[in-house]
Length: 613
Ligand SMILES: Nc1ncnc2c1ncn2[C@@H]1O[C@H](COP(=O)(O)OP(=O)(O)OP(=O)(O)O)[C@@H](O)[C@H]1O
Image 1 (cartoon, rainbow, N blue to C red):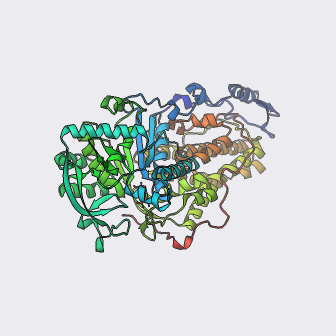
Image 2 (cartoon, helix red, strand yellow):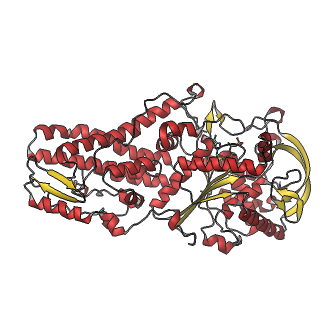
Image 3 (cartoon, rainbow, N blue to C red):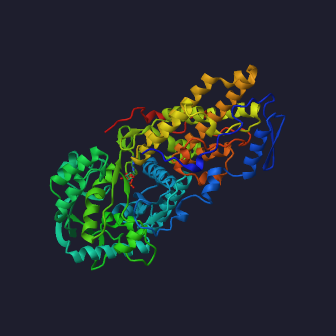
């Protein structure tokens, strides 16, 4: 989608352009909030600088009258689900163990996409949370000698702490042990019951506690082992309540045949194959599991964790005491624009979940996006297998921006990827420290030395055919389309293409030579080149901000912008022309420190390759 031309970003051409500035052709000192110009022969230039300084805020901020970020605080949760809203979810993670890099992966991706949608001006609701019932959790608690609730509370605080360290900006965190969730589960169960879609029957089969699901022969490896959890399934026979999923065969098949409901395409085909083979009813209660929500009409059984957990997306939206009625839900953004899940739980979301909603007479989510696995030695990293990468050690050593950037750039969202710390360090150094950080730092160094850290011209005055300006416009369009399609790596590559070109541009223009021995006109051109580079870096920072919010805000601060102004940005600010004439930069500070220290993980188990599936 082409970028809209925003008048708020259109600065008038600086009258100082085309004039000859003499040496010291700009000598500007900053006193508190006022700028003064001395030794500059142009009084027109001086008056422009003073006028810009008097405005004291960035032009687009003033026109917007923006006071705070468009985030959860102004979410309101009371708008209808239309194009102005965006409701996305991560899975509700099992609390059988503390979160690992795999749990963080989905959450980082969902957060980046939610941040992009906020930049578009949509009212975003990002839901995350924890799935706390079931046999698997009860077993994990017992292994620690704890009561299930005590165990859950401990693991939930680890999840919340990790999300904070990772800079995740969620709008609602739902725990399936919350009373409001239990009320929603009971109410939806009653609706489904009234539809006549629940019946009691005997079930015999192989059960994987790790997946909390019965497995067909085709879904197990030799000796009835679960391919994901590498553990033998247990043979079970129970009398359970069943949900009549097969009744919705045609509707569910038609839904998955619809282009775009399940993404990526390979996953959609997988689901289609599964559904076309014929849907079977599934059991929605457990007789032998005490740690769960009791079935209202038969408290001797508890609700199956998946029937329970999926409804968490609904209870996350509803305040305590508000009924799960279609009107109430829709008023709060229901249904979800997208559920982000790993491919391990796609079937529950793409098949079971729509069936449950159809039965309850509620709208179906618009999209299910299933990403691939972070693997270790080719196997899915998971809590049950314990072959996990601890995000905390990475965060401690490298910070949130580096971690977010690496995983979202290096692994195509939708495919599998192995982690290698060596590659992690190379990638982060090459792009964040060098391509972006160094470019900003050395440009600001030249600006400080030669222009007293003040922009001699507005970015908008850089000619339309300037190569950086041309590329920035192209890449901003590319990034927007990529974010819309959840191609996060592509959006980041668009930003990096600009910073890489910025480095090349600096070498081509070599402004340091003109500053040293050029004519006034050449010096002027050199100064304008610095402005072009700084403007390009500003655009890179905005493009990358959904993924690297900390780094981007440091870049904006380095360009003289406050955190509040950064929070107020909109995607339309990628338009060239944001940096005004006379903008004063603080003392140049490195925005990203090169990684030099020793590796912090066991690199010997990591491979560099990324296996697409
Ligand atoms: N290795 C992984 N790669 C990518 N995402 C993962 C990975 N492991 C977990 N996730 C994310 O967590 C979701 C599953 O949550 P869950 O709490 O079951 O985690 P888990 O570690 O896979 O647990 P377990 O190993 O016990 O099955 C996945 O659908 C995905 O969103």
